[in-house]
Structure formats: structure tokens, C-alpha cells
Image: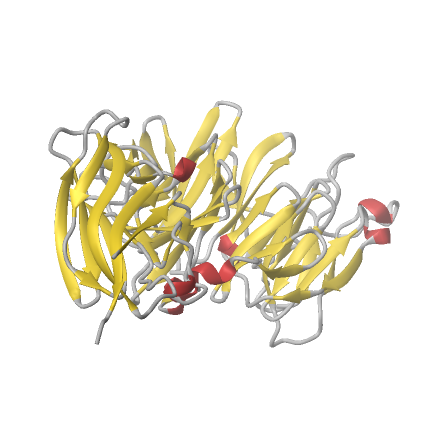
Length: 476
């Protein structure tokens, strides 16, 4: 018999882009609630309540946002047929829709109106709303040509841009340039100075290809349509240019468009996409989560960025935002979080916030539970034969280093050898310098491991796991 070693030099993330036999040992065809920072493998942190009081009402939570004011940050929540603000230690209703909304889609933009910070709220079904921290009321007027039922908002070159008017689905509106008595609440013309006036233009001509989102970069406004992407260049109406962007992507969801530096990331049913300032395309590693997306829906996805990680909610198995895809931009690593609902997500100051099924605003990546629910974490290694299908692998030992935060916390390991399976419970020390030896049994021509936690417990494994086995070939 010949001795052999199968090494996992590091743990990176999920890869579903190819057959498991072709995957690197550092990748997993299926993993959940794991953290692979530094190449190590540990159970991820959970979430803790940021605001103890639940969001009022019993209707679905549609959106949350953070409104930055001179006095600090204020959480805004749209739930049921109302909009709430958390101020003075309590949730307060600031606006109520007299007639129920049909789609309950919300978009937001923050801007100054008459030298005061406002949060502007769009639904696509009613006139825009403006909130100054004290009072919420309708934005704009018929006289200012700004009483439109816009659904998408963006601030670009100090102007408010709006789209998603159900009566004019291809129309892009822009406000007057603030100053000299003008404000973003006026979208009309200025005869004395056309360069500061408001106005609108049609983007494309197909009603079947309406505008479905807006996002602003420093040098251009990106206009997402159902089947295409356009951009607006220029700094005043006199030199505005609208042109189609070359792109090979599926439809973007306005609530899952995330800005980072000079690029936009957005999740589609086909995978994670990027607009790099010139064109739009699938990320080179987008297929790494293709199996997860195949059985999920991105139609109502929400996106956010926090500390160089992208987060996108997806609906699995017909559920509502019951999983989160996490993408580490610097390491090009995917992970999936499950075990909670995230009706919406947003970030500020290096913290990611979620609105969960308990109607609480929680901070993600803190604590040891998902707001009281156990974290069930696992990591599957690829099923492989080492490209030696004729050899029989006889398992001997597993070598690993790691630690646990609790005395009785264990790492559970299921070993699958051919058609045989065996389970091992490994108590980890508090000192990572100790090398543990786990005696193994069974033999077969293929093998894989499933590493998971016990009863929501926490553990961390160092990179450099080794599986020792002996190989032989059948003799006749």
C-alpha cells in the first residue's frame, strides 16, 4: 500500500461552477453560515438587536433606511401602509398612505431642500414624500412639474433625478440646479438660464423596456432598464448625453444595486454582475453560486456593502428574503447565510443592519445566535476520487488544529468513503497550537467530508487540514 495525503491548505468559499471532482480542496460545493477570513474555517457570528422595540404594526416590512441628520442617524422603516422613524427612543409614525399601495416598493434619496437635510421617498404609486426629521409631507407640486409618481431616485451633479413614472415608463426627470431661489422640488424650465433648469428626456422607445432603477457614479448617471442599460453624461442640460451601455446581463433589481468606488454591483438571476464605469457584465466568478440561484428568486433582492463585503438577500424555496449571499470583494469568496429572514438590509459606519422576522433592527456579525435562533453551520468538501478512480483509498487519520470558545463545543465531521459513512465528534482545545489526530475507518474510491457545528456551538479550524490514507489497487 502507498501512503498519501489530501490537504486543505486554506478555506475560501463556495464554488458551484464545475463538477466537484474538478474543484480545488479550498472550495466547497455547498456551505452555510461559515466564515473563511484568513483562510481559516469558523462558525460565523450572528446578529444582535440594535433597537429593542419592534417595528410597529403587523403588515410586512418593506424597507429600512438610515437618514443622516446633523443630530445623528435616524432609522426609517416602511411597514404595512405606514412609514415610521425611530426618534427619541421610540418608533413614531411619520406618514400613512390613505389608500393601500399595490406593490409596496420604496426608493430613497437624501438631499438638501432650502438648506435643510431631507429624506426623499418614492413608491412609484404616489407623489414623492419628503421628511426633514420632524415632519413628512408631499414633495413637489403641479406648479413645479414635480408631482410625479416616480419610483426611482438618484442625486447626481447636485440635481435630483427621478424615473419610474407609471404613465411615462421611459421618462427620466431631473430637477433644477439648487441656488438663486431654485430647489430640487422644481423640475420646470428656467428661461433666463437653461443650464440650471429642470426637464426630462425619453430613454429608449420601447414600452416593453421600461426604466427599472437609477444609480449615480461620480461622472455619470446609470439608468437601468428591463432589458438594457443606459447612462447620462454631462453636467447640465445643454450637454447631457444619454447613450446605451454595452452589457451582457439579466434584469437588475433597483434595490440590489450597490455602489463601490467607481463601480456598481448588482445581483441578477444569472449571478453577480458589475458595471465598471464603461460596460456591464457578469463577474468572472458569478457561476460559483449558480446552484444556489437556480432554486431561488432575486426578484425582491436587497443589497448593501459593508467593509468590502457585498450582501444580497434572496428568496429560497418560495420564501421571502430567507437567505443572504455574502461576497468578499477582496478575496473573491462567496458564502451563504441562512437561519433568519432579512426583509431589508442597509449599512453605515462599518455595520450591516437587517430588519428580521421579529420586526427588529439587528446588527449582523455580532453575537452567537441569530437574534435568539441557533446558527447551524456546515462546510462540505468536494466529492473527489483524486483522478485515480481505480485506486481504493483506505482512510487512516485526520490531522487538524483549531479551538472552541466553550469547553464542550465540538466540531462534527461526517466522513463519506464510497458508499460508507462514519460520524466523528471532535472536542477542540482552547490552544490552537495543539494538533489533533482523529482516527478514521472505512475505504472506498471516492471520499468527502462534511464539517458542521453541534447545537449551534462555535468552533474555528486553522487552515492546513490533512487527511491521511493508503491506496491500493484491486488484485485479481
